[in-house]
Length: 215
Image 1 (tube, rainbow, N blue to C red):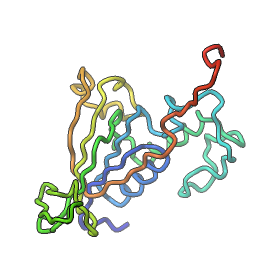
Image 2 (cartoon, rainbow, N blue to C red; image 1 turned 90 degrees about the vertical axis):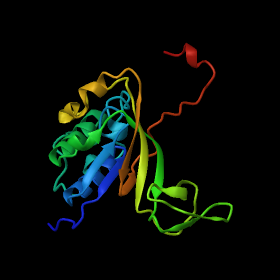
Image 3 (cartoon, rainbow, N blue to C red; image 1 turned 120 degrees about the horizontal axis):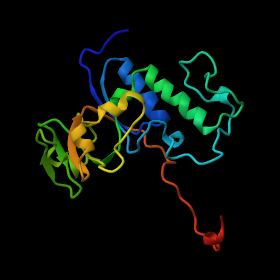
Image 4 (tube, rainbow, N blue to C red; image 1 turned 90 degrees about the horizontal axis):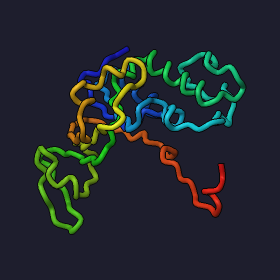
């Protein structure tokens, strides 16, 4: 395998199915990968805190696994595996490919600011021009046809619920951070930003008459 001449700092938002596959690929090719997950586990909708009783695959298990596996996962003992077994497979995949130590749990992306070359002139929305400095300059409000050279991320790490995480990842959280009483907001820079947040993380339960009387 050819390693990159200059490894990139890659930030991946979300440790669900797409986040794990993306992290595995960039990590496999030698890049510096960090995955930011706002929950306490990998797996996205299959994570323990997000699934509900009776949740299982609609498709059969032989259609639901990563292509680098030669056969149906050992965890899939039923034709339509339940959520616990799907999560077990995703966790084992993350362990096998060294992804778990790369995940920072209970961490939410607050803002992503694109960064541009310091000599680039960036047109703003009112039609004027502004020079971008090495800290991003007008990039946050500007318009340009050129892709950014990097990103500055503002993230928030939650104080509540920072306890155990998946597998060996529990040790990845600094003890001082785990003992913090307030959420911690911090900034990092990266060369590549990949959003793998999905569309099914937040439940949307419609109100209906008599709901309070149901069991």
